[in-house]
Length: 278
Image 1 (cartoon, rainbow, N blue to C red):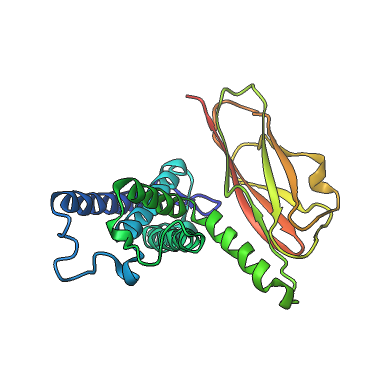
Image 2: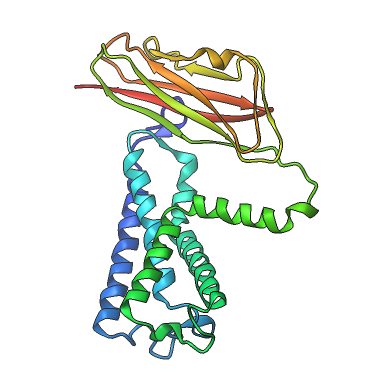
């Protein structure tokens, strides 16, 4: 069932697909533990890219991507945004790619620093080294957004001086601002942060943040702090906080509002919700 703000109920299809991914990755691991050569069998090289990338690296990255996808599906089960479905479908593959790239960066740094000689076959290193590779790939696959931001900053440092283009962009640290359960009386406050991820100062016009209430629902208990109605600026690499307060008017309903944020002419939508405590 689709709600007024474009959200849906539990994403059971995504959950089922993630479970299939985990089952398949688990089968590959068990098969490999039973026969270390079962992954190759003249089909795949044991260590692609000249002995630099063990196959366990993309495996761990895919597991990290699947894990964060399953975590997100569970966290937002009651308020799933349909526009995130494609993103979750590609998370395991994206996790394998990002995990492999993160591992390559570490491996190249180690070889450059002399920690691993050029003649060393990484595929023949011990279990501790393999465990480290798996952790690196898993973490990168799990938090690929942080890793993409790191790559972006590294590229900016390398080629930034020759690039005069101005990047006007920002990010909001919540797609869904969930107050959780309430008892109908206790006021709560949650904070949204607007991060300047570009290279230009961002401007905030009057009423840059507004709540849109569902007309069919009872009167909203959400309120924005005074900064939402005042002008301002967000410096490069800076952020602006916006407090959202919940003062329930009744304990017999769920609250679902839409927070629209307009920064330098670019809009972002955040779903704001709270559940009655049954």
